[in-house]
Length: 377
Length: 182
Image (cartoon, rainbow over all chains, first blue to last red; front, side):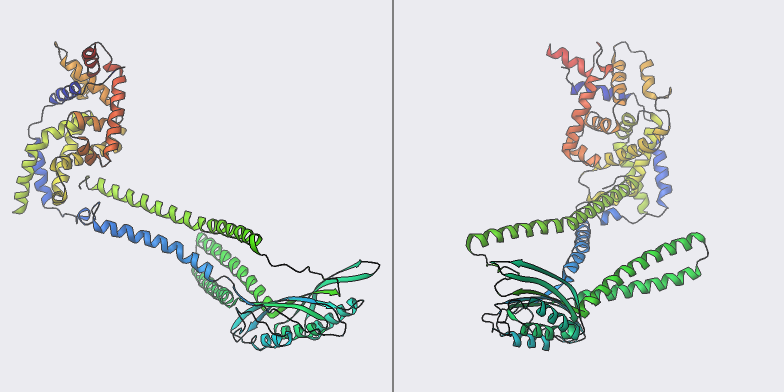
C-alpha cells in the first residue's frame, strides 16, 4: 500500500512555488490601484452588522422561525376554532310516565334538527332529568333568536300497543304535516313471534325549527316514550365565517371586473379571466355550503323508532363497565392519538419544509454576499 | 490623510504577504497571470473592507480566505471557459528546464498531480502543505468545519497516492515513503 510523505510534498510544493518569480512592480501596481480606489465610495459594511454568530443574525433567525411557526399555527388553530360546537341537550328519563292510550312499554324518538335561533340554548351542555313534557317546553323556550344558528338533535323511542303500529305511523305523519314539515323517510318491518305478528319501524320527520319541540311533545303523547334525547349544535361561527368569506370573494370579483374593463392586452384579459373563474368557483362552493347550512338550520329532523309493545326496535345499550369500558376507552384513545398525529403531520411537514427553504435561501444569500465581498469575515 | 495611512498599511500587508499569497494562488490556479490577477484583486478587496478585520481573530487566515475565495471565483467563472492546459502555462514550462538532480521533475510531477485534483481538494492540499496552515485555520479559510478539512485532506492524499505521475521510480512523496519503509 502506498503512503503519503508529507514532508516531501511540502518540499515539492515549495520548490514549485519558488520557481514563481515575483514580478517587479506588482506591489506598486496594487498600491496604485488602491490609491485610485480610495477616492471611490465604500459600501456600508453589512457583514460587520450581521456577523456569523452575532446577536443580529440570531435575532433574524429567531424572528424567521417565529414567523414560520405563526404561519402554521394560526390556520391550524383557526380551523379547530371554527369547528362545530356541540351543544348537547340530552335528556334522560329516569322514570317516564306511561302516557298514551295503547299501554306500550317504551319508545325512542331520535331527532336531528337545525334551527335559526336568536337566544341562547339554555340547556346546552347540561343533562337534565325531568319529565318529558317539561323537557320539551324547556327546549322550546330557548330555541328562538335570530343571531344564533343551532342544530338540534333528539331521539325518541316510542312504543305503541299491539296492532296499533300502522295507526301510530299515520298519526306521526299527520303531526309532521300539521307542524309544517314532512316525512323524510320511513322503514317498517313485520315479524312473527310465538304465532303472534308484530311490526316495528323507523320514521324520520323534518319540521321547521320553531315546531321541533312541539312535535316532540306530540309524539311523546302518541305512545309510551321510553327515552328522549336531543342535542343542539351551534353552527353560528361556521355560518358567519362562510358569509364573510363569500363577501370578501365577491368584493375581489368586483375589483377584478373593474380591472378587466381597463385591461387592453389579450394576455392581461386572459389572466384576469382566469382569476375571475377561480373566484367564481370558490364563491359557488361556499354559497352551496351556506345554502346547505341554511337549510339544515331551517328544518329540524326527528327520527322516531316506533315499535309495538314487547318488540323494541333498538336494543337497549348496556353501559360499558370495568375492563370492557377500559378496553374501549383505550382503543378510542389510541385512535384519537393516531388521528391527532395525522392531523398535525401535514402542517408540521409544511413548517419544516418552509423553515428549510428559508435556511437554504438565507445561506445562499449569505454566501453570495460573502463572495461579492471577497470572503471577508 | 487617513487614506494615505491606510495605503501605507496596505504596503505593509503586501510586503508581508504578497509573495506567499501569489504563490498559493499560483499553485491553486495553475498559471501565473491568473494568480497575479487573483492576488491583486484579493488585496484590493481586503484593503477595501479592512474594517472588518477588527472582528477577525487572525490576519493570516483572513487574508488567505480572501485569496482562496477569489481563486474559487476565478475557477468557477473564468477559467472553465478557457483551455486550462495551454502550452504557455508556467507549470508546464517547468518540465522543460534542465534538471540534473531531478528537483524540477519532482515539482513537475507534484504540480501535475495537483492539477488533476478537484479544486476543493487542491485548495486544502496547497493550504496545508505550502501555506502550512493548521486544519483549524484551513477550516476558517474555506469556511467549513475542521472535520470537512480532515476528510478532504485524506481524500486528496488518497488520490495523490494513486496518481500515475507520482508512481514512477523517481523520488516523489509516495516513493520516498516506500523506500523509507523498505
